[in-house]
Image: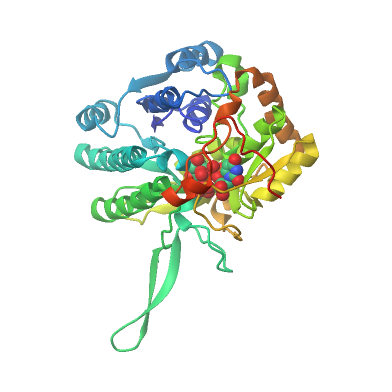
Length: 406
Ligand code: USQ
């Protein structure tokens, strides 16, 4: 297949591009390199040293003989250029990762809120609009999030995207309907992914586009089979308070002797998936597209759930790291249960990698190797969800607030 990977320079986009290229697909990365610019804006860098996209693809070619082409396009702005690109290349599939993906970054200021909404919603709409306009018959696979469902305890399993409901008619009869599971975003970033769902629903219905939406949990780990092939193919790895995600952050914190930064009681339960499974799921989704005219196909792309404090305690036991319970900068339920259905990927043959020490050790090893690159002052999460929360969460770049509160 000829595959366009939008956002192919990012944390999941890069290993996905390598995986698909390895499988013999003709991979084209389209990216505006915004993630690299955000590193510059925030004054942080990936824990792992990352080469330019051109250099990465050159090394890939040297190692494997396979070519990945790179095209510098800003999907949120360069609509006409993207349309031209589609006409010229006519991909069989488009994988859409090209969105600002960090919840804390999206909540930093009004400017960051605007940027995240403008970038994410425009990019998604431009892609859909351009597919229709050019008549390219490409299957669109989008990287969505488990966060569209929200995190309230309801005592029921979260289905894969759709909820059967009964609606009472004026005559008092009950009619069966299937609706998108009620959207309940917890940040501006998650809100954009909820908006994406409506765009997909409309374009699948109105234009018969073939769309798959992957509701992914929190990704952990760093290596895949392909990123291991050469030191310069290494994946990016974020540890800072905005882009670092919880499990990877704890592993890095343990490696640099930093207390593990649990927000609140750590009673938040979340869905997780290893990066290697993430790229496998994307391949499975590519190989199983919906038919034109079918509703959007939604998968829950996660393999297990964990409570944040259990992860912290586990890593503490494994490494001896101290656990710090901190004021939570986010507005979120302090405790929640989470049961998620994920049968579709299992039925398609996914054999999940689950949390086990070997793999955790691997991440700690990577963290130790590059610990000299860590700026400890960037570890605390200081982006507060509301102005009131900001007052209670002291903004302290030197990490003075990193005192255990329980
Ligand atoms: N948390 C801590 N300590 C930390 C960092 C986070 O306790 O140092 C807590 C947060 O308060 C939250 C949970 O851990 O309750 C998860 O936070 P996260 O930063 O790991 O994940 P999140 O902000 O939800 O976003 C990440 C990705 C996003 C993806 C999402 C999947 O950045 O792109 O969509 O995970 S999900 O969480 O399932 O919505």
